[in-house]
Image: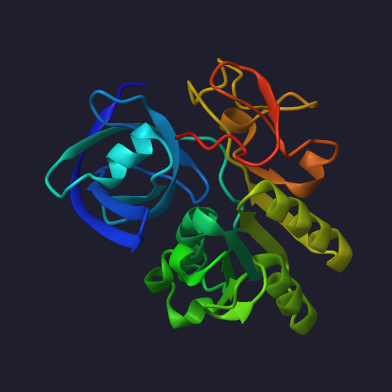
Length: 267
């Protein structure tokens, strides 16, 4: 698949290290949860989930954690970025009418896109966004009142004191849901999957791993020990598909299997 050019229309600061980039993407068709392979000249390409798509304008929300993402966050309106895609399997938004969306950190980005589509379909939406502090929150202005946004920060500097998982549990105790959509760090994902089992609610999670090709060839995004590829079989998986998968295991750029925090942020 050849690269397409996108003229940057706007760059919106979300927090000190995160920006949402809006760019022209005429003809692009995608569903929430799918991703693009994005690059700027002189840098490597990286996978980034779409945080929005409307009227030929796409958005990606980028945290500056590596050289490429740092370059992307310094993009200015009028510049050009290059992309190919969309790739992967997105969220199934036909599983009932009542949705709980749980985002941790920049994992909130694909859920903003999902909330847009769900609300346009007349579904009931409740969003939980969690972060360490209020300075880490993103996309707060992207959720309309109908999204019923609840904020949780671990230090209590904004919203409820606690984690996204704590806030999600509260919502599950207070009302019924047909489906949970989640994206965030591995520990949060594991906890949300456990909540789904406890409350008998189907869970779909979007995972992040290092990707070099985006089309299932290089194997850098494999999930051990099942051999699932995040770029091809995901990045969205149903909870039952991840039984037995070590969510804290990922492969670095050399292909070495690593355990622990990070979950292979693409950089």
